[in-house]
Image (cartoon, rainbow, N blue to C red):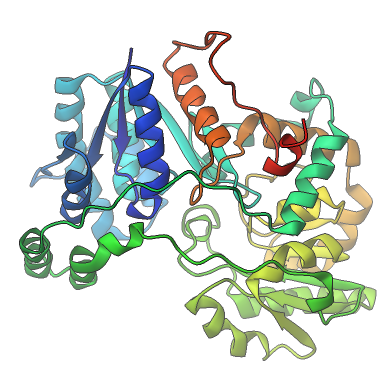
Amino acid sequence: MGHIVFAAPDIRRFHLHERLRRELIRRGHRVSILCTERDRATFWQAQASDAALLSPDRRTAAASDAELTATLEGMGMRERRRAAQRTLGAARRWLERERPDLLLFGGERSPAHAALQFAARTVGCAVLWVGDGLLPHTMQVDARGVDGDASCRRWRPADYRVVTPDEAFLQASLAHALAMAEPTSLPRADIHVPLASRRLLDAGAYALQGRLRRCWRALAGWQQALPQPTLGAATPLEVSARPPYVAVLLQAARDPRLQFDAGVAPTPEQLLRAARRAADAVGAGLVAVLPPGRSGRRMRALARRVPGTDVLESRLGPVVAATAAAVVTVNHPLAAVALLAGTPVVNTGRALSDLPGVTTTATRAAVPAAGPAACRRGRPALRRRFLTWQLRYGHLWCSPSSPNHNGVLGLAQAVERSLERGADTPDERPRYRPGPTWPLARS
């Protein structure tokens, strides 16, 4: 059996990691947790005994680590880059000592995660990334990265010719997204609150380093493991705008897709004004879908600066994307719902669905002309092949926040395939089946 390491797991994904850890241990694997921040180590050590904290070097990585340096340069955040470079030496030593078979990344991207991935490659350790998928309650799974770093972004349209489109599967996926169906989650394990003394020590250490924002996380960050409220389902009757309209899917400033994949992304107001010109060119209205939480509240007044813009909440995103004449976004994942409905999509940044004939990539200045071009140059057959491969093979139907039994089985089997062991599991063992939960209940 293999030794699997959860690499700097996010506390918000505690339920997923706990259920996966339990399933892997049941299958005979050893599971460890490796943290790069002391507050996270304090949390995970309270939940599991096999959790370790890396002690970063005081010196930065050597100049010969050019690949890591180039990767971190693209992430910005100079201070965090330096911290990640100091993590590299400690990560190499830990990996060389423990010799794990697989480093599992839970989808969160940061300079520290990049350093861990680079260290794993240098010592010959396999890597597997899982992250939030294009549709609600799905997850990407890839050995190279997620979103803009995914392996499939190097593929050309001709590479999808071997994929047979599954129309029934795509229709079920669209219905699942529009219905905002919530999966039946597995029972949650009890959360062991870290000792107050440990949390105070962590907060004091961060204060001495000048990392004041991290102090709060050290004190109360364990609460991120608690169940989060879900968005209510939306119905078409709640969408006040009348078709035809162009939909703009706005993203929070801290969205990792914006931070790592968009380059110099346009501001929400710039994107809305560009979409406004595109909508005026075809005589359509304009609808802005706000991101959830505090970011959405801040953007509401900003979006209303653009004349004639209808502002809608994030929970209406799937309905709006499916019924719009065109969708404009930087790289919002809900653009996949538009693709399932046959709606043209224009991206201004790198995206998982960035493939000629499937979506159209344009600069902010070229957005007004890109919408009509996307309608003319769309390739429906290629789009169906792309979506079939993504949602059947490149994604797991496992909710990151509310994993069910089928999803955890799929995740465990993906881990075992990455280990190059257990690819052919015994017939009596339950097997993962891709697809929305509710169609599976009928079979």
